Length: 111
Image 1 (tube, helix red, strand yellow):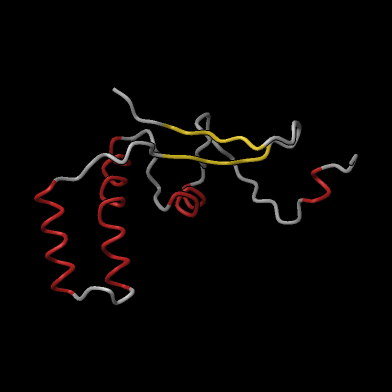
Image 2 (image 1 turned 180 degrees about the horizontal axis):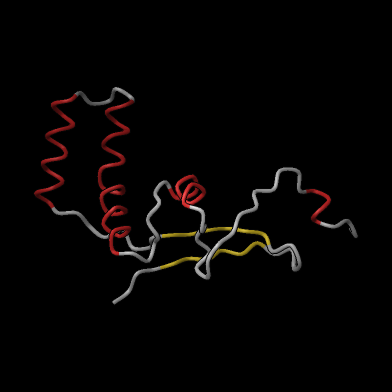
């Protein structure tokens, strides 16, 4: 319609990113991906596996769907079963202000 996308941006969240689209500022990184670890570090992979495995269990506990004993039993069962690598480790969506296209960047850990 001839109106710039910039005219619609009311609350921009502007911060510096590295070449992998990860916030450089550790406080901003923790806000965006809930950890200061970089997605390409081995420690992040371990963190993400644990978060993906135990996160749903803790949500059930917090919302009162399971009690403490059930939570502990589910955690033990999960450990016996083994923790699986969740695959994609980091994804960010952004709108390019020049092309006005929505873009998605995904980082995957591969050997």
